[in-house]
Amino acid sequence: MKGESELTVAGLAHDLNNVFSTLSEVADVLSTDTKWTKLASTIRRSVKRGERIVDSLADSIAESGDLGEILDNAVQHTDDVLTFTKGGSLAHKRTIDGAIALPGSSAAWERVFVNLFLNAAQASPDGVEVEVNASASDSAIMIAVSDNGPGIAASILPSVFEADVTTKRSRGRRGLGLHIVHAIVNDHGGVVTAENRESRGAVFTLRLPRP
Ligand SMILES: Nc1ncnc2c1ncn2[C@@H]1O[C@H](COP(=O)(O)OP(=O)(O)O)[C@@H](O)[C@H]1O
Ligand SMILES: [Mg+2]
Figure 1 (spheres, rainbow, N blue to C red):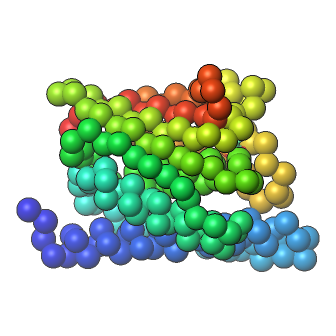
Figure 2: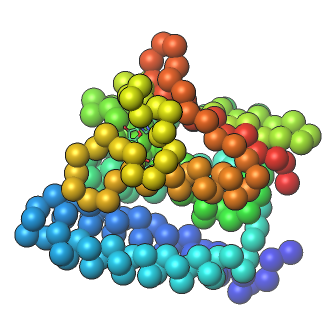
């Protein structure tokens, strides 16, 4: 059972991580103008400092989180970023086979899904639909996040989880999202793969041991 102070710390960490992500996106937008690159770097450094503080707090309260709730938060957070950056909101649907709890920090998992959702939205200027399908056996959890966008460029597909691999032109720091996704999934003993679907779009498959 969680004590009241633990819930407060978890909530705080969650809200602060949302604030940090929004600030990072703002810094990315600012850094496209040479006038503001220095300010953007300062914002990014402050965000990094804040993230380190929150991480050390969050590490002290490992928890299991409900996948449906984590996805709700991730969609809401994605919409917040989209409203500010390119407008619109994320069209999505999901099929979750029963209640699935993810091991470890919910804030980390939310980060995973926000990265996947934002990438799908950013790859498709004319709009995209994201689909999440999840199922669990006694020992494993499988989550597939697919979209109907243009798919991942063949030239980067083999190295898409490596740091600094990107097709985006913005001068801001790019190519870290999937690297972070990969690191979080690995930290939880899981595996993530990226493919293009035969029809249209990309699919990211996460396989995790069940807690
Ligand atoms: N759903 C997707 N559809 C098409 N391309 C994608 C998708 N997700 C990722 N990518 C490609 O992978 C690259 C790396 O993604 P990421 O690591 O999040 O870095 P960034 O988004 O900063 O470029 C993107 O630049 C894009 O080319
Ligand atoms: Mg990204």
